[in-house]
Image 1 (tube, rainbow, N blue to C red):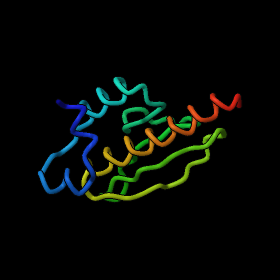
Image 2 (tube, one colour; image 1 turned 30 degrees about the vertical axis):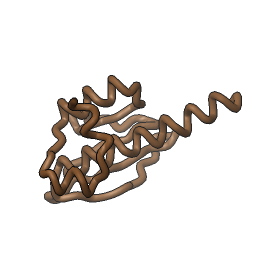
Image 3 (cartoon, one colour; image 1 turned 90 degrees about the vertical axis):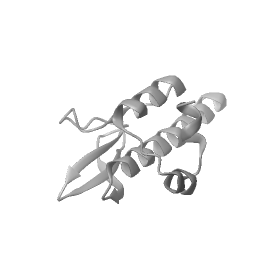
Image 4 (cartoon, rainbow, N blue to C red; image 1 turned 90 degrees about the horizontal axis):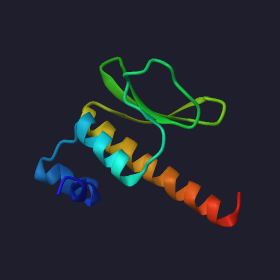
Length: 105
């Protein structure tokens, strides 16, 4: 029931007033076998991760490359929107990784 909620579109989630919290997101990430993430509990930014930083009263969603170079993906005023975006990015990264494995990269 919880996980099916994440298959809704962003518009559906907002219309229904559903809010995602960090604990729910971790369940989804584990269940779906998604990659590296950081919800701000760890100050160290690592390579190949997607995470959230809280800066200047906004939630900044970022991703890093293989050298841990940070790239800002999006900015949000509400944490649940940022968490939703992190899950979306992790799903995209997993699809890319899976395609690479199938092609032998």
